[in-house]
Length: 265
Image (cartoon, rainbow, N blue to C red):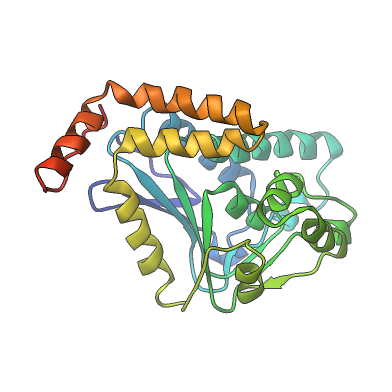
């Protein structure tokens, strides 16, 4: 798969199956502007339609200050209500595209993640955060509320009561608090963050790609169902893997005590 050159994203293959995506507006703390919305919609659409050899993505921000500071409020200054709503609909498609991307996406939060920046990280499958990072949904302090799945994904990650505390108070969490509350999976030294995220991405990409995508889908959508309905969904996802070359290769490799060679078929 050949990806275009984006204005606000750096896209770099790391090895055969891992893609490193960097939010690249460091002069604006990688804030989300209209162009970044267009770039992300295109990227997640392409990875959904045909991921090619990509089996895992790591999403991070340029520089050391910020992963993403949220929506670019300078661009929004003086924006009409009509244009604001059109822009937000673009952002909605970007967030939905990220959530529904079949390829696992790891957020490597290298610095502050506020508002839409934290919402973007929450749309990923899990989060590694650098020491010194701060994470918040401060929208109510600006007369708004989270509008990038923040109220939904945060509550699912840390529970209703903690989500209400953070959203309604607009308080920021440290990386260590985010780890303790279940918002982040791991806290890393700043110089080790990308290395650790890429190592996990490499481990994921070494597993059966069809199996990984089906398992991701089952976990994500199953949480919106009751237990038995979710289990039936899981079995449907499982059964799609039985008659695949990858399943046969995985079993054969185990029996022959060798590393499997998955092809995604």
